[in-house]
Length: 238
Ligand SMILES: O=S(=O)(CCO)c1ccc(-c2ccc(C3CCCC3)c([C@@H]3C[C@@H]3c3ccccn3)c2)cc1
Image (cartoon, rainbow, N blue to C red; front, side):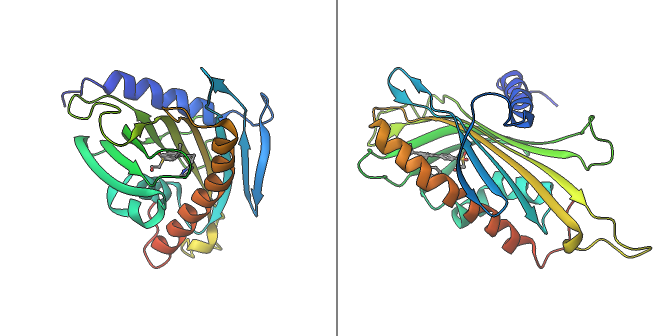
């Protein structure tokens, strides 16, 4: 198949983000800022030309769903309005392939910051886990801001944000008894969510950090609950 002009970038950034997600939080100056059950949220306080661009890393363990199911829900446009509470509008502006889309999203205005939009490619991929042969394969979704001639930044009401996001999922199977088939009680999904969001235009550091502190835990909790709900009555998809 012919590869898209973005393919080298998509491949490079997806693999870079996979490596970054798999680094233990022990390394580097990660600061735990939220905990909820098995969910741990870490951030690093970083600024780029006076703008808060705090990298975020969230680790979560969710029972009853596979990494493939979680990544598919995160990647697919048809589910997004069900879990992305801050979404105001979403368009797929380019269908690069069945595993790569380009999205234009406008997010609800979070007072007092002005409204934001994001234009990004999104790529889903299964990655053989060469380190741990027992474990199932890993699944990753990588979202990376990109340009598009028809959707220039900051021409309308929205300030364009710049994001790099990855969701890396590993499925763990608790082997059932002899010749019993695997059911959802036997599966667990280890989730790592990483994001770096440059808010684009200026927003007060204290305001942004308060938004991040409030919104990210809500977002991951809502997303994972949505996945459990979506999958519970369906056959397991490994
Ligand atoms: O994981 S994704 O790719 C899922 C696809 O939708 C994604 C996640 C988060 C964002 C996002 C966009 C704007 C803003 C802010 C910046 C200034 C004012 C609004 C934020 C801030 C961090 C807070 C936030 C965090 C989580 C959810 C919503 N809000 C986040 C975009 C995409």
